[in-house]
Image (cartoon, rainbow, N blue to C red; front, side):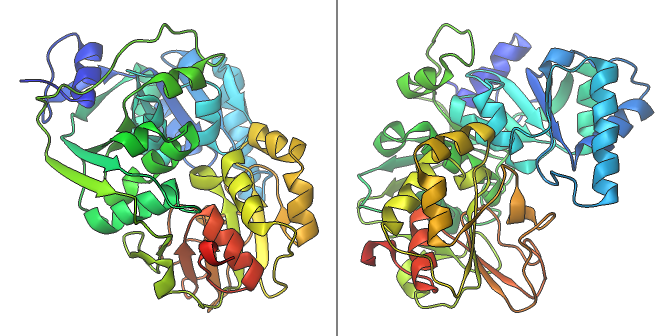
Length: 416
């Protein structure tokens, strides 16, 4: 019997034939911590008797959730992590590069066939490169920091085959919201979702990142796309690697197979308070909104801002809404800046902030008051996610966010 991509990755790392359901101790190629999860992981490392990390070159440390520090406690956490980086000689240490997941991708810290872990659930985004990437808890990360390996139960895979051509102003975010609505918030628990089909093969890396990023919203352990020419072109200049083939075998065993056709897919909106409550935008069109956030590791790339700018045109944003725009990294900010889009957004009435998580997890700024409504391109809309537990968060694509920012209410971007 053939093997899935995930089974092949673990077999390669463990040096033997590994199947879904096997429990293995596997070495990791990279380990990421940030300013929220990092301090506890470091503490656990010391509690386990750690003195030197397993390999300082394979540890990635980033500040993104509360940067610049927005409280004394946050500032203390930053100092703690800086001291750890200096003590351990950690090379991949960035304090103002942007959102951890975007920076990991940009710096080439994840690549085909690798196992990468991060103390953050959206680590699964790195699966866009053909890596097995997954989020782990801070205690597990403390173990990884010391030993460079971790026990895994190798997940079964769900094959999500996507075909067809998107309508104008419909794209990857609409696709993944529709898949989440189909599979459900717990329909892929501890599974790997393998995204494939003509539509996925035609997606750029930004779109693939969006899909893999939100695999966790269905309970998945990982999201993954088989590496191809698009993948290897993205990695040029980021990693010194000779391209190779990594695909699931035709006779690989899947937990289940699902097929999707995007030809008639409409813009999607996930309604409060769960990501799997996605509906066509027409069902919620006209809903009043107080704040719009375009950014996050899901949709904070240059391609996303280009999409939003195309919808905006020469118009202004409604004075009824607060529009917050945050590029996901320094590189994405500079690309957006050099293209003239930052000026375009500011002139239209937006607040453009430095690369960070921003309102996404409600920890720094852009918080919602009780009763307020947010429309966001981020990945979660749970109660209290962006501020008050009495607020409401809807999720959408950059095109839908831009259209809605113009009108002041949820709007179909195809009608603007």
